[in-house]
Length: 248
Image (cartoon, rainbow, N blue to C red; front, side):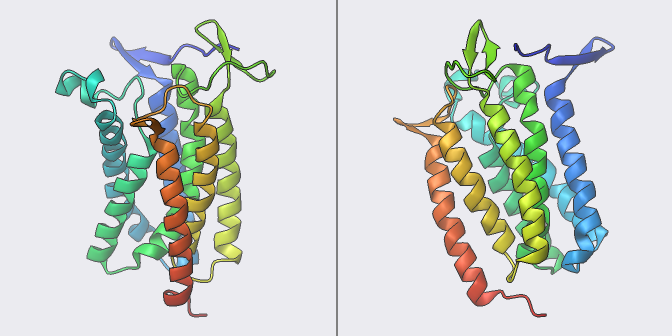
């Protein structure tokens, strides 16, 4: 299977790409589901929308900035650096900046940031699952050569569809975290920490297959970040259990 045309349609000479459509679809679904689940966290739809209106654009900016910083040699102008139409968003940058935006808005609104992060993070996994298909349409974020029957053809070579591996994992993560958050969460921040652990484990191993990784010297950046995130998330989980338990 080869990747399809990345352009969905054109309006007045402007190409609309599947990449943007899929990312926007993931964001919209994540927002709608989070609004619907707000009551389970003693929050309101207005609380969610106040946070999302800041989190989404700042998250996208962070994802692009993170990607550009690790690829400075490829960009020669500001216009090139901000052009995300053909791809080039790093989820780790989006998670960092999006989380900072949540912390700032929640502090201003005087609501628990950890509670809000617990509410939002399952749907973030869903948005990732959908958005990863944008990589398929762009013919990017794939692995090395493979003989497996589900491999995809990129530039005449059959390769690992690493976008697919991550998409499936994130969909399962959305289902699991939604259940966990509803039935097993005992302290604010635990669902967020569980995401950090489980997503990072998957990303560490899938990143080993990819051929377009961002690098820190000889190391793959996403693998280094994933290891740090696993440790930090375990510590957050334990700290939350000791200090931020939910009162029944």
